[in-house]
Length: 70
Image 1 (cartoon, helix red, strand yellow):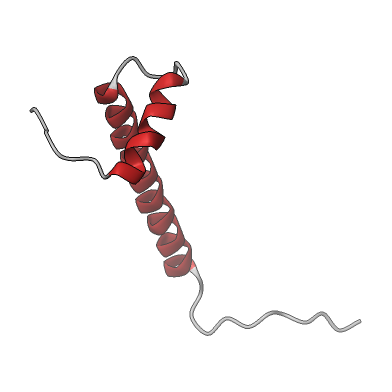
Image 2 (cartoon, rainbow, N blue to C red; image 1 turned 45 degrees about the vertical axis):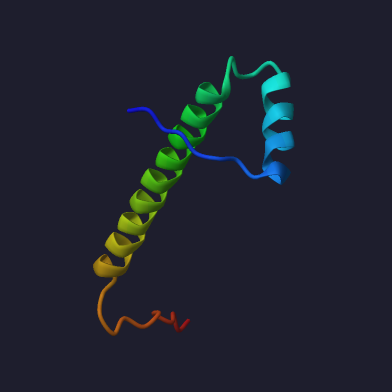
């Protein structure tokens, strides 16, 4: 898939700095990295939400802390 879109001037200079950093060979590499980061972030959020729901579902209903009387 090829993607072509305009980049606002205020972001163009930021993109140029990122490319000049040497971490990316070209604009496509930079945007691929952004897409990969976004996917990892969303996957992690979904896993966290699933684990949180699992924890909530496993909680005993109407459970109250037990108090030890000595």
